[in-house]
Image (tube, rainbow, N blue to C red; front, side, top):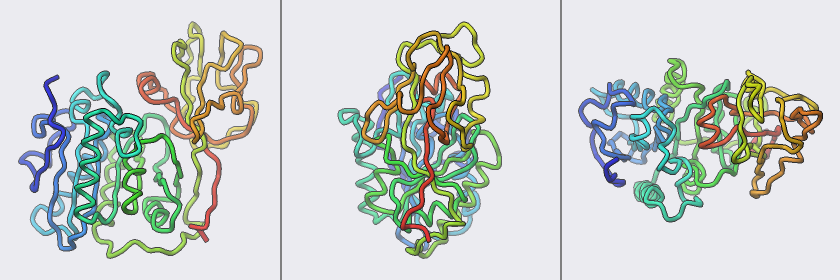
Amino acid sequence: MRDINFRNELDHIPPGLLDVAAADIQTLLPGPTLMHLAGRREQPLFVSVLLHGNETTGLHAVQMLLKKYVHRPLPRALSIFVGNVHAARAGLRRLDNQVDYNRIWPGTEHSSRPETAMAQWVVEEMVKRNVFTSIDVHNNTGLNPHYACVNRLDCRSLQLAAMFGRLCIYSTHPRGTQTAAFAEICPAVTLECGKPGHAYGAEHAFDYLDGCLHLDHIPDQPVASHDLELYESVAQVFVSPGVDFGFANDSADLNFMSDLDRLNFRPVPAGFVLGQVRTGHVPLRVCNGSGEDVADYYFRVEDGQLLLTKALMPSMLTLDELVIRQDCLGYLMERRVTEGQE
């Protein structure tokens, strides 16, 4: 792959962008690109898409949005960051030689990477423009409902989340995410729009972005508890390095149930069997918000079975083995109510 220019900035929509497929967007944009478009209100809405190259719903939603306003002014200035165009060409979350584009933002552990310097530059540019709010659009690979994620529990963040739907996850890890970085300077939310390629996901994200463009302000009042079902992400689950794993694969050392992702956003009781293991120890690494490995707190091995030690609710469990290796198996959540709700 040729050297990448990490600081592409435009003040217009490149010809062809409104219809290009994610796999072909590299023909229009040589690398990650920040675009600024004028609108009636000067304070811009910031939207990031394709931070993961195989999560295409954000691009489709932005294309729908730009088509709506192609012959009339935007209600508010709009800044769009198109992220990992090289991974998008390959249809992958990230390439093997890349760092995850949703782990490179201020607060990241990848401090020496050129992608990190780029992310810092994007944030600084948006600070100069007095960014109104930030929306990061994603897909996931497992069976999940649509939901929002926030990194702060203030009223405006929760109001943004409630605009997208009833489900919201509060999370302070992993480090270096776009939403965590922008939450330091403006209200910020991540939209999780189900699996890529589903028309409803793009339509839902489009309606949300269009609504945000029309906002005069974000309410600073608590969200009613019946309007938002709030969970806290308490741990991130990884398959331990070097462990041979699969799904309904009797030859694997760690053989998960074939439909593991059906457990997402469902209460799972203590003692539930997640799969079979050939070793006597838990072949998972489970990191809490402090980075501690708490695998033995949530899981145990008994008679060759991998069991839950306590009742919990998972999210983003996936059957995609490459995504599991590149990122994680999923997350564990607990129900939460805060002062940001009434």
